[in-house]
Image 1 (cartoon, rainbow, N blue to C red):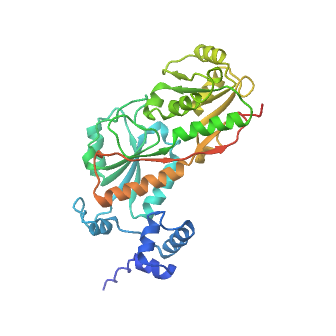
Image 2: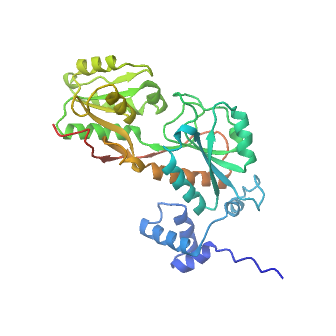
Image 3: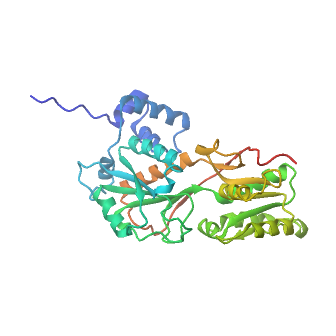
Length: 342
């Protein structure tokens, strides 16, 4: 005689153990700001102890949106990026997997092969039962458009920099605030002529937030104190950078981490020849390089991406949104030897 299946732990079970109402548990497990952090953490600990995992399909049923998958199927979420970024996204992928499991989803890392058509990728993703996609970079260049995925089949959110077309929901660091934070740090340490060095396509993909933050600040200064940014094409040369530095009398460069590494690889000593601030450091990699700068919580971005995919699936929000939403996380300052006091 077969044994009865174990009783499923419900929100009401968690609420009873935690000493709160079941609506409070529901809101807390979704990360709602309506529940204070101390209570959210307490409820999450209780849920973990009891082994509670929600069923996305039951949530969908409550919202009258469960017509896209059978009740017995377990929905799968995938994070999708190109192969050479596996190490870069390893910490984010781990956090995303943990958060997906907490919300009752299967999870996988899907490597995008540029040699395979977007339509074929769409078929493979669908065949694996994937309903939600967290989208990272898929091409090696600074592409302005996503490949033609079968958008209507999936709930999608992008992480990191934006893409011009199609416009999708996204979770990203706040590029505008990050550049402003770097400028504030430069002036506070006595630097007088901070210069912005970035790539034209990256700036466009960030919806001009990088240059916009810098230029709008410079416009507040007297003309003699203003520094023109270097917004280069992909093939800009070290000679062009040095000419810009001399012309604008730059005493500290604000740029991407990869720009700092490139400057050093081409013989520029940091901070011996020039001080450097990165505006795109990551929480998961703060110990991986010595640049000072604005740091964004890439692990929280991963959690938020999963939470938003969950909301999309529950509410039946698939395909390209009519009004895309962008969640922007503010950055915080991290010291580094590339930015000494003057």
